[in-house]
Amino acid sequence: MTSSSATRDGSLWIPEYLNSINPAMCIGCGRCFKVCSREVMHPYGIDEAGEMLGVCDGEDDFNGELSRVIMVIDYPGRCIGCGACARVCPKNCQTHIAVDDRAVHES
Ligand code: SF4
Ligand code: SF4
Image (cartoon, rainbow, N blue to C red; front, top):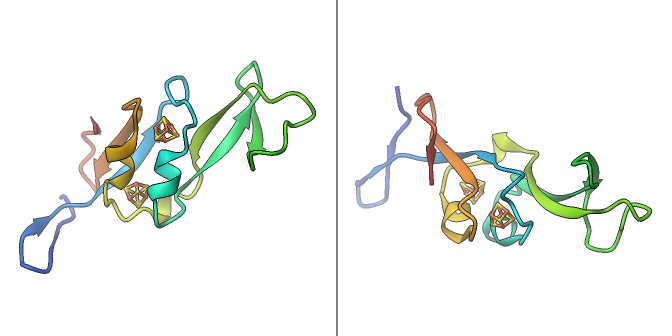
């Protein structure tokens, strides 16, 4: 069963929760992070091998090991399914899912 509710005018509202971010496609632009009111995701540094180095504050280069920054969903339970992050992503590298609807689709 899919979770649904209503907007203030009574229209049907089905939240679509952030389900994944493709690390190979994400460019770490930070747009999703900036529009999300729930702090669901954070920028993380990775090294050349793709190993996670930790949350990236924009200053730390992790002792020279920083290769690039990607966005990571580290607090998925905070998502309210508003869809704002999907609308701003320039790489279309996120997937969203309606709760209990296991058919993941591209946003
Ligand atoms: S759907 Fe909304 S609440 Fe969920 S991660 Fe995206 S911007 Fe944040
Ligand atoms: S908006 Fe898209 S490309 Fe930019 S950091 Fe978020 S997931 Fe990555």
